[in-house]
Image (cartoon, rainbow, N blue to C red; front, side, top):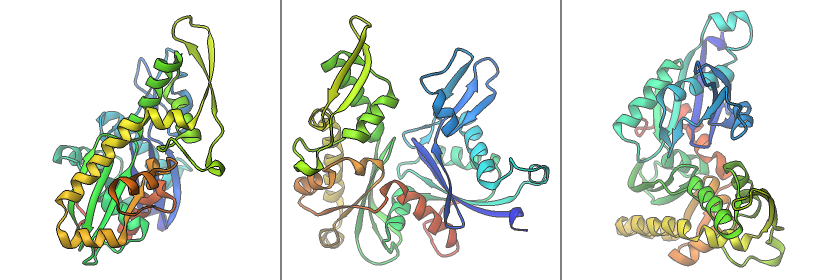
Length: 344
């Protein structure tokens, strides 16, 4: 029976977890759980748990087990991963499925800067969650595969994956990562920039959920966009930090480009550092092929144009960049016997 042997590809991200099965996304939910305060009993997971974030009564609290792309809370990560796997494999449906757990073959994407301790934590969590046959793949490699690059060719390609907790930068050739960098400067820091800006410039207190909405609605890295690409200002409602009265403000994309400028500049600097370390032949390949952007941060308006002007190499935003790592992990799952870069 297919149920007793299942294969899953998992992108265990700081912000979201995506699971592929049989080439289809069967789960795409926030990496968050809700627990009871007194007993630490699991109450909700994923999308349902996100409803509680910043709205929890005293009897509940929420936690995001992943921090900067790696496990920050082992127990919470195990509960979250187990819950997601149960959802993905249908173990929550029917008595037979609850009694007979499937034998799981899993490939999980991990950040390029993962330490042996980080990898052991992920391996243990997946094993306790039901993985019988586990492989790990570095996220830049998975991202390259998900974009459609043949990573086994003797050809230099560069990937910049701006996720929630980390930005992964890698030069890939012949099935290996030749040069790389993994920095804790990514979507979460941009969200924090927006929260700080609203507090300092508008005296308005907002939560991370609202800041994420602002980033999505009017996020831009350029102070000037073509007229037909300019988003409408985002109306923010929050608490005045001085009076505690309700306060509103119209936030424009120009304000966002200004407040996140330093964070984007850090990513630019790291890209240049990796290019400086890149061997000449691979560098020439990258100039010819361009540099690929993936991850949620690549959806910021004008980011490819800004990076192109800064580095003087063409940048391309991948198709559906949010799912690049997940798609690549799914491809790796199909070829676990053929890809030497997969780790157990």
